[in-house]
Image 1 (cartoon, rainbow, N blue to C red):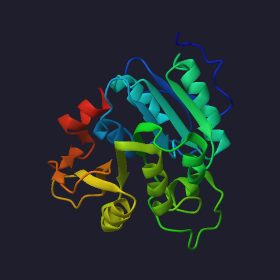
Image 2: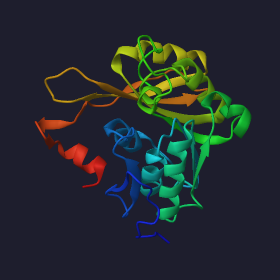
Image 3: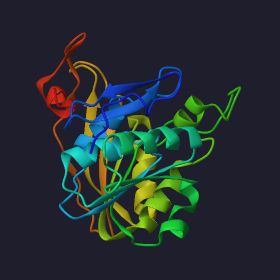
Image 4: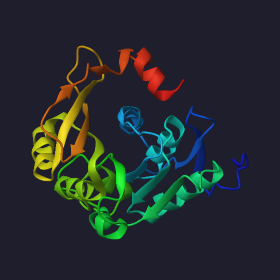
Amino acid sequence: MRDEGQSWLKDGERFDDLQRNGLRIIQRADGFCFGMDAVLLSGFAKVKPGERVMDLCSGNGIIPLLLSAKTQGKHFTGLELLAENVDMAQRSVAANGLNERIAMEQGDVRDATERFGRASFDVVTCNPPYMKGGHGLQNADDVRTIARHEVKLSLSEMITQTAGLLRPKGRAYFVHRPFRLTELVVLMHEAGLEMKRLRMVYPFADREPNMVLVEGVRDAKPYLTVDPPLVVYEKPDVYTREIIEVYGY
């Protein structure tokens, strides 16, 4: 049963409404809060009834929470490196009464296959760091830095672990930046993940895309479907109808 009280919160934290099934998530105003990329990934990912899902780089658990509301997946595991994020995520799961469907675990994605076992999930999702390396960064251990830059996990390592965790014909869903799409395609192919579906996300219809959503299938034959463009804003501060539907407003 979901707890409506504030006893789950620590100093500096707040409950945010996820607009889905009454779910709320604990976040810190001075931390790295979830963004639109995570919400769009949860809308792009397909989870069938009874499937087991792993979310890598899970942060405060936003994707497992949203997928638990949007799908009939059997169980969702979130793997996150930072203890403070895992702590918030575990309290969010408990406050929403979802301990039986969602487990948030602390650990390094680079050890995921060894820890959870090969071919142990039907679906893997990931909203990874977008920027290469840590060149010029002042604090490589900062929460926001780890979320945005590949200082703790490279794109290659993430894809290799995803492929190891997936059963044959299992599906992977990623959100990334278009400027790294070629690298993403190559690394996925080398790991045995064939890109099967792609969708570009545009802030406005007349702008360049700033996100790309991709689906890969383990041990599949090459065949790529390109979905229609997803446009976020009709005009400044006004979402398109499709974005409104993804958010659940």
